[in-house]
Image (cartoon, rainbow, N blue to C red):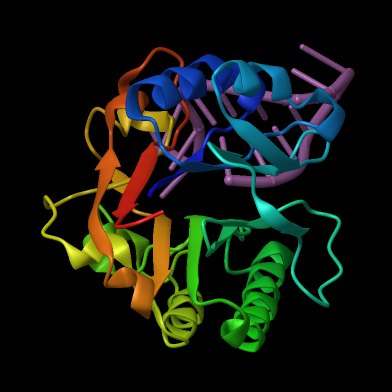
Length: 256
DNA sequence: ATGGTCGATAGTCGA
């Protein structure tokens, strides 16, 4: 099973990119974030025409997540259990016996912001759900835009970013807490090029200068991580005309 | 030089 994640920063603008990538790379499941579409405007037919199913959870203007898949997903669920939230950031479904949870973690804006408090509360609620539902699923994948750089290898300039949002100890501790439930960052199971990033700011020619961060992650539960045969960042779509500021991250698993 | 550039949307906000 090939599974991938991509923050598209408006599916309306990026639909042709997504369809081109599906055609060339043929994933079994592609998790999208920042679709920025209401559900009635979701381009279901475009994906069906490409041989894919879609489930989605959106709102006007902001956020929005979707799961694009070869086979239909089962037991589709939205949001975080017990966490009231009008922001559409979580969508889960089961594919071939693997529970897949697609996340658009809040950005947090800055450590002084109310949005940072919301980010930490959101992560705590996510942790609680992941902890409580562990015995319900044999295999789980948690993927998406985490808006957290796991460690300094994942940051182009760790000194400049120290203590800044995406890199604070509290965010990294929250991620470490999730990993501590028994999840593995599949990207780091394999040897990777130095300065591997998944997001580059649109400003200051950051992509050309490779001033990026690795904040888009594919976590697998421990048993499933043993079936992971590879993980990589596909930087290609970031070079396309009018790109998203994020690119695609991929993980492959035996079976499914 | 404390900005830059996008996207959604119509003056700014969010990233």
